[in-house]
Image (cartoon, rainbow, N blue to C red):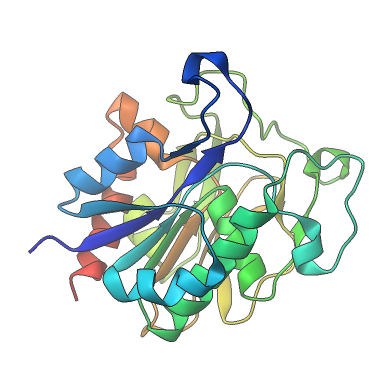
Length: 241
């Protein structure tokens, strides 16, 4: 049996004529294919009531959190900055519930970009609402080059999932303007950008698989990026246990 991977979906709520003004729940195809290619069975989890989180997590073997909107700062005790972009509070609330239930059941979690940020918030951490106004931001984190190409380097920490997959240093793409400020409980940072922003986080406990990255490995799969597929494969492998 293939391990069942629950992918938390995003929503298009705008009235788009091409979609006949219909609201859409979706997941990037690249993410789905990354799970397929790793031997997993992707199942889409539409945004819903937080009360559904336990039933969803009961059904799956691992949870994947994708990219998307900014995380509402109200979920980590801050007021919105003038630099905050669009948020979707119903998604935040639902994904926080999914994370907490996955942790309770010790189901593996893999998170991408915004997914890493909402994971951190769910575990008690905070975010920079906009890194572009910070003096420490000295490289471009929102690339204009097509994201199937890498843009900047990262370095990884010893004895980490990041190091085992990505070696000591690699290059990644980058499509974010928010980043982790304070780490959530029981998390550790295991990769960094050249200007010191957290690029990957993991669990402090071997019993709980967590691997989250600030970049978009699913888009790099378009360019047959082996390290990115290895990230998906490592996650699905741990969902089999």
